[in-house]
Length: 199
Image (cartoon, rainbow, N blue to C red; front, side, top):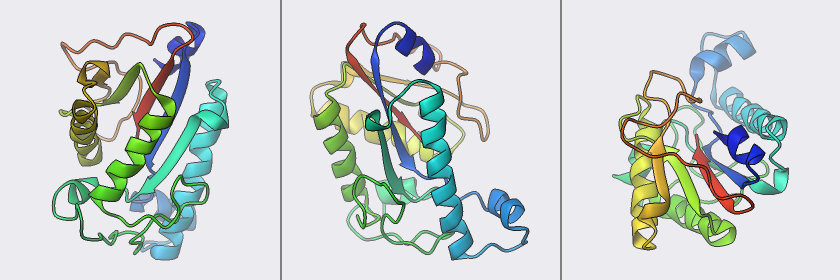
């Protein structure tokens, strides 16, 4: 969808809400250990953030149109509920604030309030005609949570009609499987900004 939007002439911005630093199996393989600790998990988050930038560049998205937020992988549902104002400590990294290099708001506390403020700043800056977010039926709890956060933010702005919820609903997959049934996923008009919220 991103590649198609770029070919059609849309300006695309990508937001990574997490750095993917909660996947212990990947860190175990990379570090050759059965029990990766906080430092290894944080190192994996840094690596995955750099990989995300390279992937965006391969799609033709300039670095200036990418945003890393760096909130806890596997912790978004806690931020949306029990830790909306109280700081959350990530189980896998031991972090309680954004630590990823190049993040939009370094040191932001892991709270739902801070996450929504960061996403709001992105929306204010990009002024998207279209926002893509995961479907609420997605298998991954972070993806499901992000769909609810996106709906709340866009509704509060009176822009719910600009939101499209879709993407993968299969376990562990975040990719080009297309929108959820019954949800439109038209690209933004040529030359207009589109924001893509991704994990």
